[in-house]
Length: 364
Image 1: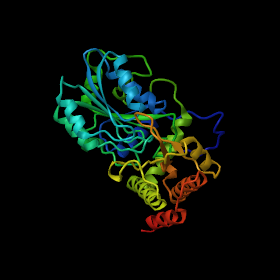
Image 2: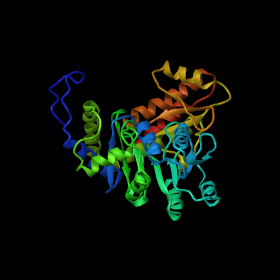
Image 3: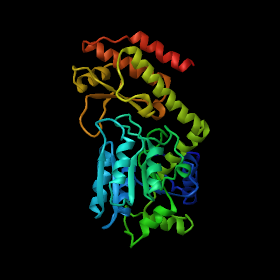
Image 4: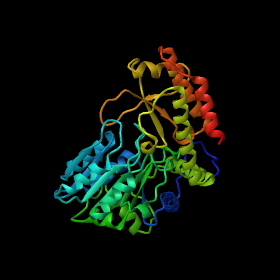
C-alpha cells in the first residue's frame, strides 16, 4: 500500500495503471486460477449482469439454478438478451438438489450455459458446487459461478473445478470494498462471449475488458475509481498476511461455533451443517414472534440480526459471521443476543449453555 499522505475523501491520487494487473494476479491466486482475471469498477451485481449481457443472444440455451433473488435476476438478464432460459428453483431457503440438476440437464434440449450461486449470504446455504460442475463438464456446458459471498469463506479452486466464469466481490468474506469486483474467464468462456459478435462500448461488455488483456493489461476502460482500488489492495494485503487457508478456517470455525451455540441455546438451525455455508447461519423462528420484532429486540441489545431470505418467504433470522465478523466476539454476541431476544418474546433459551458451547468450540 501507498503511504496515505492525502485526504482519503478529497484529492485522491490516481491509482497507477500498472497495479491493476498486480491486483488481478493477486485475485487469481485467491481463486487458484492461472487464466484471465478482469476487474469491474462496480459492485458485483454489475459484474454478474455483465456476464449475462455478454453471453446472452438468440439461440443460447441456459439452465439457471435459483436459490435466491440473485439467481432469479441472472435468468432475467439472460432472457433480456434473447437466450432461452430454464430456471431450476430450490425449495425456500435450501440448496439445490443435485438429482434435480441431473434430471434437468438430461431432459434436453442441449444446454450451453449453466449458472449457479455457490454460497447464499441471504439464507446461509451452500450449493453442491463440485457435483454440479461435474455434471456440466460431462456435457460440455460453460459454467458461471457467483462466488461473491463464498470467496474467502470457502475454498474456491477455479482451475481444478473447471469453472469457466467465476464472479467475486471483496465486500463479504474478504472484508474489502463493495464498489469493485472481479471475474475469472476461461478460454472456452471467452470463445462463447466473442462468438457471433459481442456487445461493445458498454460497462456490461466483457469483450471490452478482454481488450484490456489483449492490450497488455495496461489501462482499464472507463474512468478509474482510485479509492476503491486502494481499498481493494489493502483488503487483499490483509488476506495474504493472514493466509487464505486461515481466512477460510476462521469462517468455518465461526460457523461451527455458531451452530454449537444455537444447539445449546435450544434453537434449531435451518440448514444441516453439510449443506450450510460458513458465512451466515439461518434460524427458523418459533410460531411467535414475527422476525421483525425479534430483530428489533436484539437490536436494542446492540446485536444486529437480519431476516434471511431464499426463493420464497420463510420465517428465518440470519446470524452473520462473515469477514471481520467471523470472530469469537461476534459469534458470541450473535447467539447470546438471539437468545436474549427469544427470552424477551417469551421463549426459553439457555444462554449460559450457549456461551459455554461457543467458548468450547473456540478452545479446541
